[in-house]
Length: 370
Ligand SMILES: [Fe+2]
Image 1 (cartoon, rainbow, N blue to C red):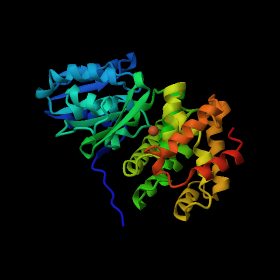
Image 2 (image 1 turned 180 degrees about the vertical axis):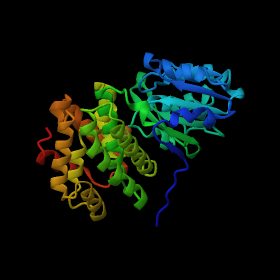
Image 3 (image 1 turned 30 degrees about the vertical axis):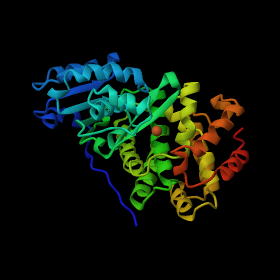
Image 4 (image 1 turned 90 degrees about the horizontal axis):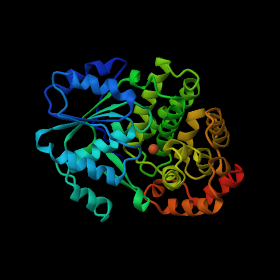
């Protein structure tokens, strides 16, 4: 017995960005994008359309913070009544910002209630969202949630509402071709983490697991080649496809323990999200031996070997990508680690994990994680 839901219209392919004018048609919209110089071309492109955006929000910072969103909300509230759509062009931070604007429509009271007063989010008839990702990693273009950080109080919130799935996602691998190596690795490892976390998840269903396996296999096959050939459009296309699989997988399950462990590591040690999520993956995989037959069999399909060997191979994949593999390499004191893990298993995402802390601690010892 299971249910699967994902309503996003995915328009995928090299050069699909050139069809954006037709896709946007006569909508009244704002554009949310990054401030970086290499996004000048896109801003110019949109400004030259016959149906131009009413406003461009291009001061999005990495890991959008509550205070940044309050400022964006004030700006948004002035034009809210004139627009029907938010177009997001960029990486995960842009998608998050766009979804939060679309959800709260510039009513900062609702953002404040959600973040500072810990109330459930009030989302009513949000603006439509068109997502145009420029990285292969977050799959936010295929999910109905957005992350907001409250750096002042060192906390992170996830807004989730079925009305926040983008209406359309235009995924053009050409937009990803100029991304630097480090960003390609960290975002790619985020997609790998989403794929695996959807499999070792209490919310998994046969369709999400199918996509999780396909996503993980494609990242593992593609990313090590891509980091040595960053401008290869075929490899970029495969990574974009892996990211679609990952999105179709974890949009139905949410993430699990690796993500829950990662959050304080990103906040307190400034480790990029994809790296903070991925360095525990081989250990988590090994901890699932003998825990749940269905999960074990699904994970074994990725490398087509048993789980002990699979976790070793996953470590090798991360090693090729020069990603950290243990506590020492990521630079976190053991005392902090113990607290993070304890909290993570009690956390919302940690509770999605199909394994348990006893097996995880055992796998940490077996894999010389400390
Ligand atoms: Fe993630």
